[in-house]
Length: 285
Image (cartoon, rainbow, N blue to C red; front, side, top):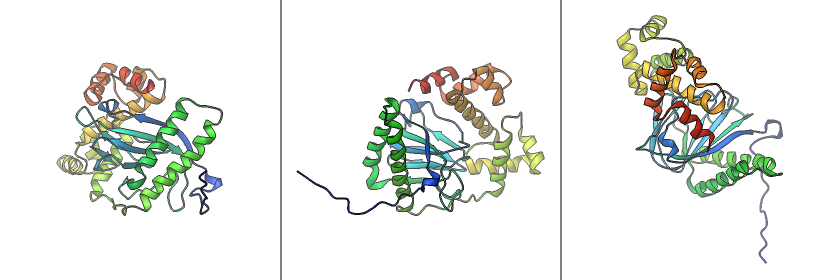
């Protein structure tokens, strides 16, 4: 018989008053990532993405970052991100949405400060983390009587591993934008992209020249302002397709398209499949 003793007590990262809540989780297979999630954010929760296969570049906030297996991506609530996978750069990942997250020194539903680059490498805990992800996924897919209790504590374990990877690994890179005006343009588009805005509207409202706006913004993000606005529309549409039962016509109108045919055309161009097929793919996983 082998008997093992616990050598030390554990001090949980989260107090009983602020228990984090797992809202949803899932696994994206590499072949599914061929249809990328375009620019989107999450209002009321943190999303944690754990990369287990593939290499690509993701746009997080206002910077592109190379990601690879073993990386953890932290999307604080309200932070826009663009997953630049596709047929030639397929990414396998697990994702977790966690709400009711309160950590001393950070705003609600944030795991890192908003001015650091939120990409971290797991290191030696990678295989342990993958095993935990698979265990949680099986419990979500085949819930039993104790599944919700197990998931609650497994979510805590997941956050502990992620926390250790963030703060006991490499020092987070400071990520304050060098482009103050570019950030102003981005914030303007984030607020108005559902409206029929043009580059002239942006220039008029911000008091900037058209050439300066286009050059500064593209230099910062790699997209023109109007390309970015369109990606925001498509990303918001993807979120609505996944999380609501609105019709495709209603969704097209909600994100700022006058005609469903135009919406379908743009969606296929940027995602690679139609809105209806995208909804079916995500809901049948």
